[in-house]
Image (tube, rainbow, N blue to C red; front, side, top):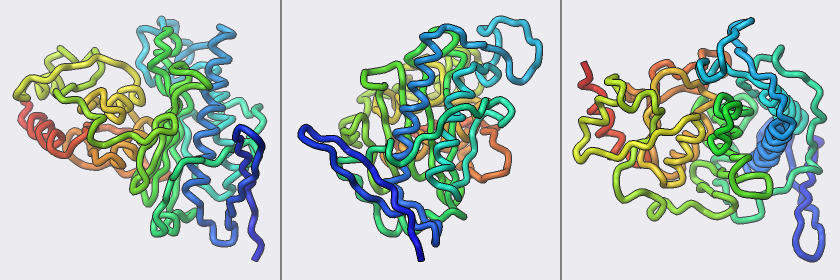
Length: 341
């Protein structure tokens, strides 16, 4: 049997070295370290496209769901807004993934007709393998078959924030699901930090890393309860705000926008939980859910049911979700939500 070899070029201070990862097309089993490394590179590539389009200043922002909508972008729902950057970034990410992993199933946020199809795909020679320890258990690698793996891509999470200039809220999300549940993810913030943006990535049973440094489960957690949620829910008297008000002691509420941005606050220990009403989709949550679970956190619908990331089925998180850093807080939030009238 013939195997294809993917060559990763990595730089150190004195020379360039080539590392080889074997991708076995005869068994269609994926190497998780190689897959995550590719996703990091492609998230950065998507981020570079997003920053490039921002610098051009011609975003062609419009409502992708309603043709001819003349409302201001600020009046549209977050999941209605599309720019040229969304389509270009998805094109680059998914075209490249399909070239590197021909049998990989992928779901992208934008419909095919909204993606231009003009981006040159990245190849293995463009990808740097993760250099720090990233030890994947053998049972996990052996489970990553083409039949059981699906990637969920949001090429530009926070498009409305992007158009309105709230650039720190923007991210590129690539989640990896195994047997319909999140197992690994990459979140890139293209306008935060330097060198192409801040990147957070990891996998269950491996760990979570922020710009190459391991995120510590114990120390990276707020001492007080901090709930992050959209400003529109904070004091609207709805189910989320009422539930937060029932918690004792009363938590601090941090108002932010963009799903990936809010989940990242919990992952990095800047918030204790993220409450979200209906409106997000699987590509908004797959990466963040995997990283949060890798840190011992919990993500479910507002009714306590985990979402299934099943290719070809409904992709809406129709019952909202809770993303909590600890199971104990998650249980308290579910109880508070259950008594809403």
